[in-house]
Length: 231
Image (cartoon, rainbow, N blue to C red):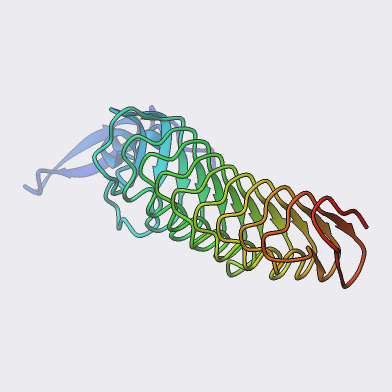
């Protein structure tokens, strides 16, 4: 038969009193309800007060609005996943997807976290990109770092270093306060702790020591000779 349209009639028991009456399909549709927009869903926080141009979907909210910190001018944020943004206050322009991603974020700006617990401990750090299960999970106030890999294998010891780029298993694994480094490859630059402004590309390519600076190494399994060295 033909499809049901708004003008079609249904017979219902009026107030369960035994008297039948007719009702249009359009009224049944209104009664059944349902959100007309995604922002109207009870478990979605979208474009709210002090959360302008932002959206939060916490998968563990059980139908309620997501939990955050006391919001104050947070804007342009996108968060999807369990415990995402649960402490957010004034952070802006963050994009976070994955369980416990950005769970400790408060005022950090411009971060991109993707993967289980990626950037999970970052609080005030800004402009970081952490992609992969546990990537950057041990960092808090560090900024402008890029780490790609699982289980915090990139820059796991970082405490205050900024402007580092890391990709590869155990790359830069000992860096604590070093900054402006580029490590690409398994174990690349893994002897550096406080050294800065180094470029290590290739498996097990390392600086001359843990505080080495201005060293560039490209290849496979060797150590540079000293600062300002290239090989």
